[in-house]
Image (cartoon, rainbow, N blue to C red; front, side, top):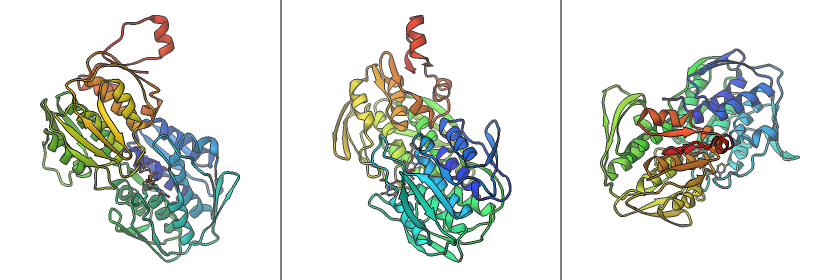
Length: 426
Ligand code: EPU
């Protein structure tokens, strides 16, 4: 299983705080990782790449300016804010805008850093954070939609350099936060409670380099499990982070998909599972929630699966209530999906039919590829640069499971007038 993008990005940013080289291993080969490499290089961090491994050599006097040109290509650039502030006492990071999945405020990140003593102002579209000295404090990171994952990462990083003890209340409990805390502790930080809503950080001043293997990607794993289910597959997945996907496994089982553990390794974060499924599926209700609830990053893919259930399913999105760009594209393929606010009713159909559809965001594009695999006829998914942000050659992984997916350049294709295949991405 690929290393997790959402763990790797804040971990790469955290490397900026180290006084010696950081080795990160098992990174996925994704455009978002390339973008973060570009950003770190601009900030003066030397980056050596060896396949899926990175050696990051931060500079004692690097730049502290993350420019809009890079931030607008990847919102997750915001996760350099806490590390830059900790390392240099100053950070200037372009304010990220919204994105296709809705408003993406960063007020909680800023409130958390202010609680540690930083002054924050906006200047020419940049967030400018300054602190001669950070001081430990109790920081509450709960917002209207739960906690914030990257906000927790930013405050946790900054707090490693603060004088005294910081307690983050209502911290994000996502496994990616546990993996980051694990890495920071290897760098010499003192963090306890990561993975629970209360994280305690004892400030240590400087951090050293470390060697860290990035955790497996639970969202890629969940997407592959749903791909197996949607094609009535009989698929064995290795390195499967079962412990991190219990809410998803619960809903898959409720629809009638079997997820069988094939080993007894503990903890079950890299185990082998067998996914089997029979048509017809049962309809289910699910609501996206912060971890350990059902992840918003698998909502679109699960919705596609439920298009094939016998009856009405109800999907409620509680993290990003507008994250439904895939709904109208699924409708183009014959899905009966009705949205009202943050809820979608999915009325199962016998078949979806292939159609040209357009990806508008990362996880939505994965859901369209899954729909194309299960649909009758040919589906062409365009704008798949969204897909490449979070899945490394998804079509190759799915083809090894028996799919027929071809990647092509539409201009070259038009010239060659090649015959279409079953599902295509361009
Ligand atoms: N929120 C606020 N104020 C803030 C920050 C967040 O109100 O200051 C709200 C958001 O608008 C949202 C909720 O809190 O309603 C959760 O947002 P969060 O900050 O947790 O999102 P994030 O940290 O920016 C990460 C992942 C997303 C994933 C979310 C939720 C990375 C790089 N990104 O984003 O991943 O959907 O957590 O789990 O880790 C993806 O991979 O496709 C993706 C979008």
